[in-house]
Image (tube, rainbow, N blue to C red):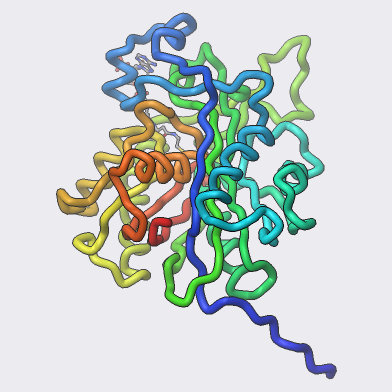
Length: 332
Ligand SMILES: CC(C)(COP(=O)(O)OP(=O)(O)OC[C@H]1O[C@@H](n2cnc3c(N)ncnc32)[C@H](O)[C@@H]1OP(=O)(O)O)[C@@H](O)C(=O)NCCC(=O)NCCS
């Protein structure tokens, strides 16, 4: 049997830079109320959402990703040519093939970086981060760009009371690179495909008939998802803390998926997070942007000074699949 050379990577990986892009159009609850019987007060009290951003025709999945990535690359202090991998997590890029990641890698000016898309719903950022860390430690890339991007407004049925107010558009990106110390903890992740019907696209693309059907949209069983998130995801978050060897007292920041402020409040309570832990509440003005929500919330906490470089943050994403991913990271 021939002997193969072992691959040589960095001892550990870390997030080196973060960037976000929010579409220019801000959509208040009043606009949502044009199509559903609800109220601003109901939406705010049940979800925490006050406004969200909707992309225009020019703010494509690729365009928003390039904007967010440019900022993340500048924040990391590297050049695009140094990036060896581009991972794009999205459920709202409408072309099945080729992956949008290849277009982004090219337009950013990477040197033929490996590029691919993943579909892991609202856990997509954590899935991407875990893959990036593996690539760096394994040695197949020195720097990897992880992008979470969505145009969920394209997949929202504005007449559906259960979802019309929830979703938003945007892109968040991080640059992951080598580290001499562990700065991304072990990932606790998984899937529960027996619950795949609780969040889904109404019709598969090959089932959709434009002469009779409403355009496919994301639909969900709100209460079932809410209960699952509240009861099961706090346990996963705790497992990620344990796996990293961190107590809630040692945590500076909590960045859960921005799905619903009541889910966030409930997790904070169950995890018994101390007062000093800064909690991301970007959902209020960004809505649920699925794979983009965690990097967007991270970027905002750092930009506003609520969190700072070097802070220890617990991140957890969860959603359609159902899938989840949680880990503890050091903020860039
Ligand atoms: C969507 C969500 C906010 C709805 O809140 P809820 O408290 O579960 O609402 P319910 O569906 O139980 O409905 C409660 C009542 O509000 C009403 N209602 C539902 N949607 C409404 C709306 N948009 N406006 C006003 N009233 C509404 C219902 O008719 C019901 O009225 P009733 O009590 O008279 O029967 C909530 O279920 C949720 O956030 N779920 C998780 C969503 C999520 O995070 N998904 C993505 C995960 S990645």
